[in-house]
Length: 174
Image 1 (tube, rainbow, N blue to C red):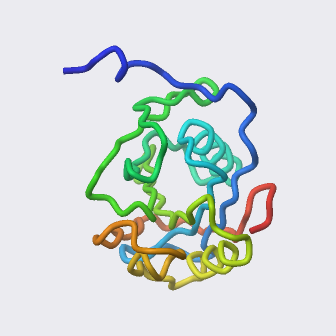
Image 2 (image 1 turned 180 degrees about the horizontal axis):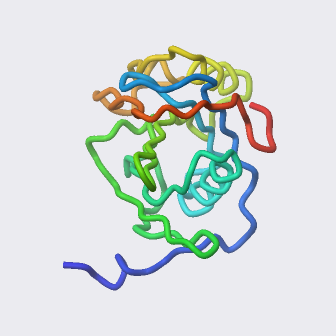
């Protein structure tokens, strides 16, 4: 049953900061990451707005849905308004907290390693570079980012599209 809270569309009250992302430069295969993302906080409305705007600017396609692990975030909205669109958010306890999966029109699927917001700059930069290297396979959580594993389950692979990715860190170089 859908509740009123499930139908609420959350929006960011302030201009979201530039996303700190780094995308791979080569085609993804099922066992690969498409890059990395270092959110600045645990606020999914603010951070996902920033991420989707950055990915749209990179020309990856129209992101319509995102999958996250709930323990990694402070609140759990199901819909986020971004411009004239609504991003649907799914919360999965079985998903690794160190992974975000974005899907959209056509066969769009983007799997990004998530560097926790509190990570030191040098460590986060190294983790983002490692995750965005061509051929970077899914690694156990303890190898993707610092600190204890966030989940015992490793991420679930990249996408099958054949788009070329530019190495990027929108607005803020990672």
